[in-house]
Amino acid sequence: MNIAVCVSHVPDTATKVKIGPDEKAIDPNGVTYIINPYDEFAVEEALKTKEKFGGEVTVLSVGGEQNKETIRKALAMGADKGILLKDDKPRDSFSMAKALSEELKNGSYDIIFCGKQSVDYDDSIVPQIISEFLGFNCVTVVVAMEVKDKQVTAEREIEGGKEVVNTELPVVIGAQKGLNEPRYASLKGIMAAKKKTIEEKPAVEANNNTELLKMYLPPAKQPGRILGSDKSVVPELIKLLREEAKVI
Image 1 (cartoon, one colour):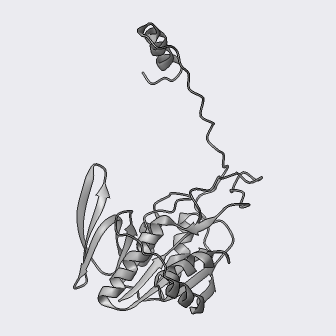
Image 2 (cartoon, rainbow, N blue to C red; image 1 turned 60 degrees about the vertical axis):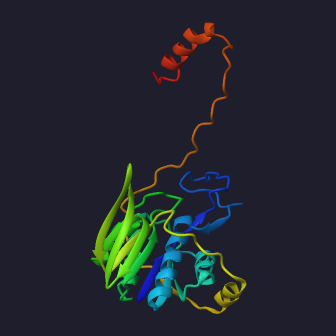
Image 3 (cartoon, rainbow, N blue to C red; image 1 turned 90 degrees about the horizontal axis):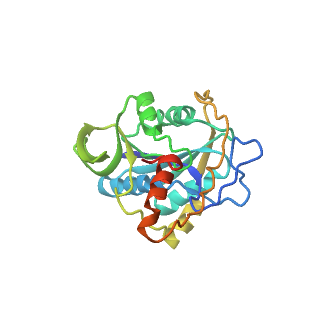
């Protein structure tokens, strides 16, 4: 089975983010970048599918030279080869999906795995756009799946519950937390990843459909106040909740 995984190189969610001087990007100084956490579930499911059916797993990423770190992480986990679609310019979800799709068209892939969203922009639409460009079926927010005789049964999260979807290959899968438990890269895998070649290609040009106007941090949380410790403060508390907090 021919399998692809699309991965993003994102800031660690534990990083203290600062806005850059142009107010359109974060300040990269001191920021630790990692493989997008949802993409780890995608890589793991791709590897499990390969182990069951055989085949090859190819990892793709759009970005600059630094994205090789994320591709290497997937290679160390067990992926077979990596492709870096080089582009240092900011891309929105549409142009990112366009670049990935143009490369994926050449691979005759049966399954394309993605994380359900990236933790930097949180748009949650790249898998769907890729499927539209390729004419593939698509199931997102997947927490369980089974492939049998080119048929795919996937369980996905919906508000208030879960639903089971039946579809067929080729398909794009958007992985959600809970789909699996991503494996750690072994020492053998890390050493093997260093010998695997990452093919570099220019990313296909595509116009962004959205424009980032400004980034800003949320206002600082106001300190708490203690009004008192007996029932005499209830009228004042109700007044503040109504007039200041505006929650009643």
